[in-house]
Image (tube, rainbow, N blue to C red; front, side, top):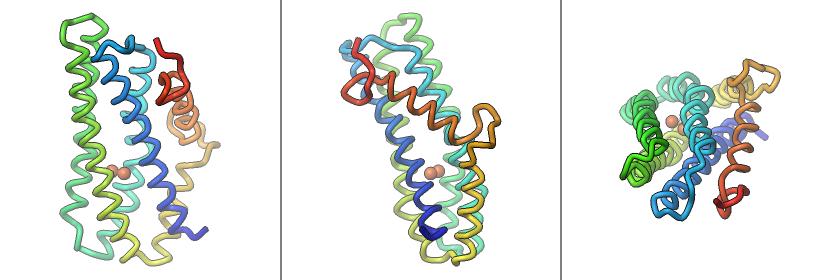
Length: 198
Ligand SMILES: [Fe+2]
Ligand SMILES: [Fe+2]
């Protein structure tokens, strides 16, 4: 595998994992709003934790600190898009704070909170999908066009550091997040995960 394939594989793989978790949240939230599913707060808080911490700890630093600056060095063509995407990285926390507020209302059985949560999850998911699709349809192709083999070597080496399971700084390495992802999958009810429906 070339360093380029390795680096692209890591970014796309992280997009898929994040999307799978956000998809699961969307399905669960919709069914809860329709009263087809009893809220499982351990699952819901776990998902919120994952989609808040995983991008900030592992994914966005790869983009903001490694990939985007190297593209900027080689080309000015997509500077505006890169500015937008970095701004969206910075803006994602307030959206999640909003979700947490409504999740708290759900736990308190406030009328309408289930429906409000489902609507907010749907908005959050749409923003996330648009962000990722811009990265995959604009940024990655531009990276393939302008980056040199040496650039890709540097990028792959720096991504691999992130993936080192020996870097055991509690909740800050990719192996820890992989295990946390598996825990979420065991809690998400069928048919989206392998958990029991309640
Ligand atoms: Fe991003
Ligand atoms: Fe991304």
